[in-house]
Image 1 (cartoon, rainbow, N blue to C red):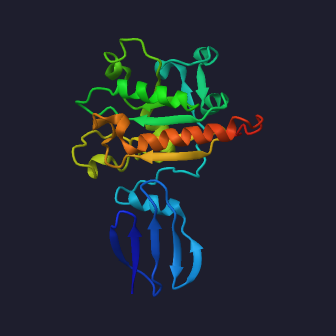
Image 2: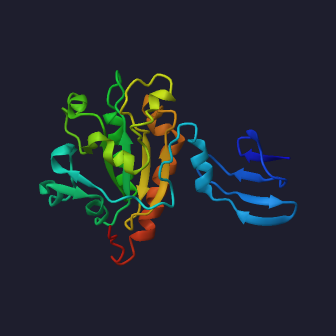
Image 3: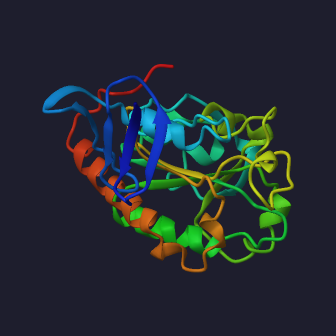
Length: 258
């Protein structure tokens, strides 16, 4: 017998399995609602984490996704490429932790930006995204493994971005987006850099839970001229809004201890 995996986009994949026929329904690109059913008997819910992880198994990457806890990390003040920190207190800190951002009691949108060779930095797209995130009640922090020189020309004009250099992809590795022993150039056509992590977007709630994620396995996010029109952007902003609504009226009692 073969198990049948049914996708909302009507992609069918057959794989060897036991004698039980399994039907997995994925409701859309990023929201997964699936149940294992045999005949009319519901057996158990399918873990959506397993479904997304399966998408990246051909790379051997297992990134953190919705429902996981964001790891604790620190940013060195000297690694700030563009440091528009809304409250003046953080601008003087030698080290800044993820919790420092979450203590603003706003959803934190953490994006891992990759400056690929030959591409202009997508500063305007990031600025536009940040403006929309702020309207929804969130805060954007950009992490990149690309040096400040790459952004120098694009950042000559005044901007309000917060961009930090992720030295040696240390934070990307914590999120499962980078593996020095398994570089992406082995899997993705056109990639030549050894140190390129997967581009990703995370919405993180004040209690450090990942409320939403988008991982760009094809490395195409910033090659699209209509960045704001990509479907995931709307989903991201919706997640920021709902996370903000959920936590904005709660007392401060969820400071995480790493």
